[in-house]
Length: 194
Image (cartoon, rainbow, N blue to C red; front, side, top):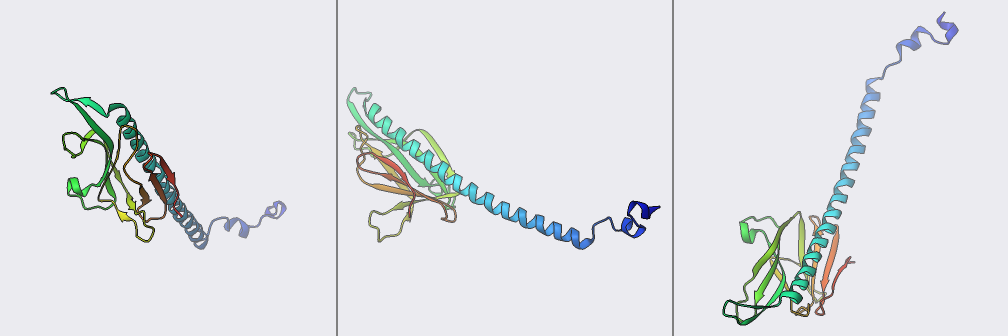
């Protein structure tokens, strides 16, 4: 009767998978998971660089705005004082004893110019950036970028800054890079280094 339906008893017994077939399928799945994990980690690192670059640029533009709007104020003795607002970037180990080169503190700060007090005062925005590196790129192209230890950018009441600065934001393996270029005219541009 089985012959009428095109099936024999031998073909009915061979319907399962062999161990070799299962091992091949498991290996293929493991390879696909490994590849997708690598691709996902690259995407995450690239997006982290883009996101943190945008946060720093936003804070720089906010410092410019503060400098133009709030640069003059009256102190308790009713004297006119002048402030410059800016952004300070420093390694987290300066503040917390943490010696990880991938942690930075970013703060919106101001300094008082007339009272000869040039110390930074945090305005209200401070955040921690982790799992990226921030370099200061020298204007002389022969020198290598240096990891930022403590760097500040200040703007005056017309949103100008005192010098050219380029900050390079990279991921932990220096694969993805973005440069924040700040000109003395107060222009803030984001570029991709070659």
